[in-house]
Amino acid sequence: MGAVTTMDPESARQHAAPPSPSPPGKLGKGGAALSSGLGAVLGTRGKHYVCGSLAAFTNIIITFPLQKVLFRQQLHGVRATEAVQQLQRDGLRNLYRGLLPPLLQKTTTVAIMFGLYEDFSRLLLRRAAGSGTPEIVTRSVSAALAGTAEAALTPFERVQTLLQDHRHHGRFNNTAHTFRTLLRDYGVRECYRGLVPVLLRNGPSNVLFFGLRGPIKQRLPEAQTRAEHMVNDFVCGGLLGAGLGIMFYPLNVVKSRAQSQVGGAFVPCRQVLMTVWHERGGSVAMLFRGAHLNYHRSLLSWGIINATYELLLKVT
Image (tube, rainbow, N blue to C red; front, side, top):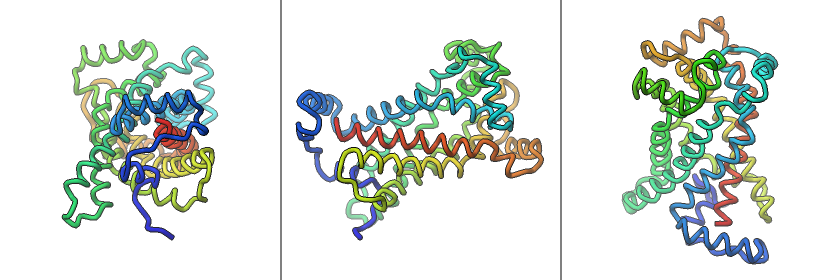
């Protein structure tokens, strides 16, 4: 068995040498010309941001209804069937209500996640050259920095929470109206309610995602075709997303509860957690209600994101 790396072997090759153009037989003349043109326009650095953004866009469009069911379970502690019934009562026209904030937030944060990780890794590896610093340490710091930078977009999660909460349907009309109302009535600080659980989630989850992505893929059956590579990337991303989704689920519960409040005092993260804990009878099962759906959603979401991202990297 070869040496285990902390990154995807395909990504490692991209760092080691400039990507070679795909054979025309694989993509066709038009596909080869398009990929060469995109690669020239985006450059080696820019394409990580664009590929991450497009991968997130694909994922959000497919999984948004599932995310709404999960959100209702996190917020109210109800069963999946009750959450689905709530959405049915809201009507089809409200099914994609609140889509714009996660679309803007996720396409941007995933672009930042992959793009800044590559940029920070390139910078820190260059500075650490010859210092004896283990590569895993450098890449872990890069992942944590990228995750922390993502938290700057917390206002999008904040608005998404308010638009998905049926208790606020009569108060907030759409994304722009919600932002205007929060800024006019409460100020910028209100948009960052729930920032602490976001920071506690983003940094560590990024470190684990990028640190385990390479080792997991190396242990999957060796891929020979593009389709097999996509399957491996889907499995790798899906398993990591599902596992990390369960691990950090209580923080998402705390974030949803904190961000469903409008105005008033900013309650510490620990106090919000204890409030939810007591409301749900001190039951771990109730605290994790919705976690099974989150597991399947994360499995699908991060499988789509990772597979789409790696595919786009190969064709651009």
